[in-house]
Length: 495
Image (tube, rainbow, N blue to C red; front, side, top):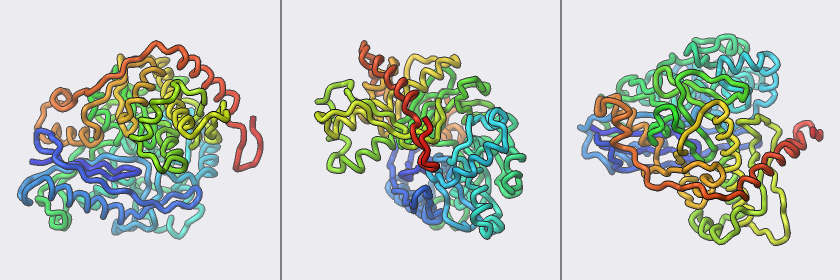
């Protein structure tokens, strides 16, 4: 018996093979390819599936002997990327990535048509942003009517991949949290919202609970991938939630954060929280659970952007060595809002700012300021969670950022929490494998799976550093005074 975890990532597709004891046997990755043009970010859905298939094939060849072994495939990954298919399940056009922001005007239209508080109470999302697929549907209706008239089904990326594997169309609740047309308390589509955009429920997949087994792969897929024809597919859950499971964050009182392309913070609650702070609230990975999930798109992507443009000659490892020689905290301040502001401030017009620049500063000073700025954003969100009653003894840190001891210590110093680093770096893949193991009866519960499979390799303790706290106060004051200063679309100063 083997479990194959598939993480349908934004930057990389990861396929990991585990044995029945959840020991990682091998992991394969594929780099995702995009077609970008201004605000538009698209991808070839069929090519994406072929990359998934190729990674599964290579991973299994390295991990399992022969095709007689029964397997279970568990999916996790990104949420909002939209694929439109015809009656035969074939894509009608390129898929639209969640990174795509073409639908700003549609956001304004929907915001005018639907009361903000009503939207929050139904979807758990405090504002309508271009990320949500509902805004892309309205854009397609207005700008590509020839495509709109042919759409048989609107699918999220994970729906499409599981359809290609099994021939069955399902969507699971934790992914549909991110569409802005899912009622998180009634666990059904918000028909008034989709009807406004000219979409019917019949054009959407049947919804099921996260972590549901939907049946075996098709015979054609089994033959193509060399898998047993009775290999089952589990719909799994959102990558952030799989990461929670993979780090042991499966009950109230635990907070986890991931600094990857985005910065996400997650904590589980047993009833929806709709407070004045308007923290995003989602249906969770387990039945009738909920997750407070502030997601900041201006997270690790800020560092990726700077390194890609100004530090191409450095590896991340070399960069961290050089940064250790710098004065910490750095004199520069960076407001990391290069993609606008999500939680807790919500402002699409916000932009990134470097403050305090002097002649002595070099590109490594700017790098350190970026890392600090992302952590100050983390602290803002942690303080909001504390205000709604969430308090934990530590933060469990995952994602690419957790590999940096410098960044992890900075997180502890600025947030004043213990920062714990799990032994397994691939938390989402492990979490997906744990879903498969519990679903298949290899573990009697998630608690037992966590007990057996999750370990902490290092803890960073907060130091008594008043300079960081003073700098955080300045960070907040700068945001209040500077962001936003300019609306690039209307070319108006909007101080």
